[in-house]
Length: 144
Image 1: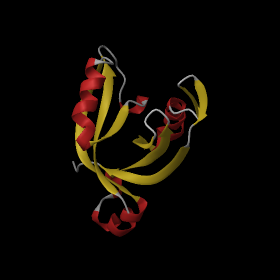
Image 2 (image 1 turned 120 degrees about the horizontal axis):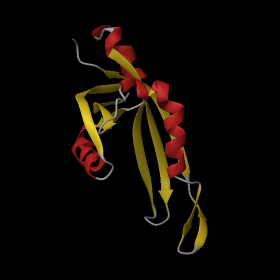
Image 3 (image 1 turned 180 degrees about the horizontal axis):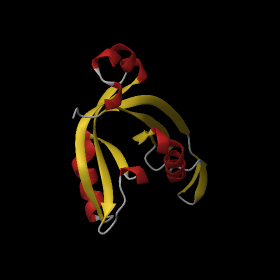
Image 4 (image 1 turned 60 degrees about the vertical axis):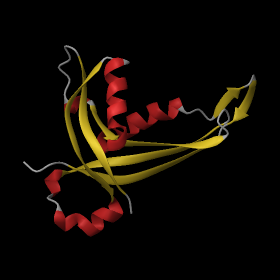
């Protein structure tokens, strides 16, 4: 059973008419949101729109809590966990992302390319361990 606080927001560039239906919705852990926003705006040139903090919970929690929420307030959002061994750090780095169910496969493919199976470290090729977990869950939208 897992639950966490997320911020749901929409990304746009100056002059973009892209909206939520264009795959621009992001779900970011609340404790990372300010730093993430700063990087998105200052390094990548995005504007953050419609930021909404709420709760994400997995299917196990949903089974217990489903009577507390109206179905239309729940957005299917998957948690992707990549446990990636970094030879440079000599440690497993857990990477946790939350992705809309409808965009999941496309975004997962992009993310997996950021964490290769083999890396070159100190001039030699090394195997890199990568374990991937997926967990179905729901983001709770505010009422109204």
